[in-house]
Image (cartoon, rainbow, N blue to C red; front, side, top):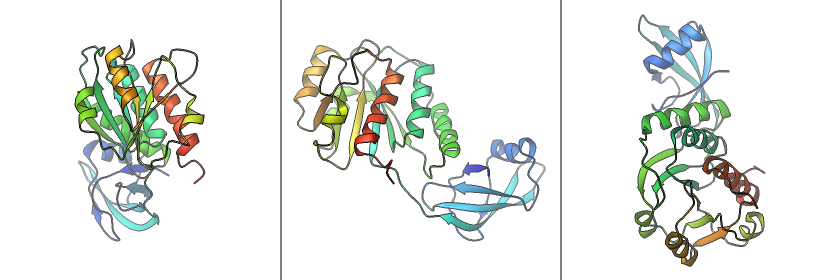
Length: 239
């Protein structure tokens, strides 16, 4: 069944107005008629069975019928990704959403190359990925900030998985004993972290440095690999 993310409140009988693009998708691409059904979620109120209440010349209206799944949130893990080129950045956002991150934070490091970032495009990718994968929320994407500023404001109760391309213990052996219910996973830029950045990261009391294997990975591949390892060690796959 079609799933759509619509951030409006959901309750029995609530009227919903999809965006114009969503309405075109429902009525022109999927050719839904009045009375036909789809699934809607908003990240707060669970997953709802909705019906097409009315097809208009411009858009359509939906009606929330009943909740079919209670709200479930993914683990409190965020991906912290150094800004990279458009294609690998979009790939990383799509796959991180599939793998259940709650937030995606972009950072600028010493070796980050200047890039134009369209947060609206990344938000759209995250929404579409959430719709397709069955999750009931959409990860928040936070605008880029310098790595030093991010670390200066870090919540010490949140653990940090520092993926160090120069080596470290295997993630699956290092993570289970590190403790902590909330995590961030830090992935560096093309060219890796600078020596000063690496020294600071390894000295942080809340950081766990890990290796992602014997080969140097692209940033987008490293993000997928790190999230997979974290999920296997500490995540919600058993649920």
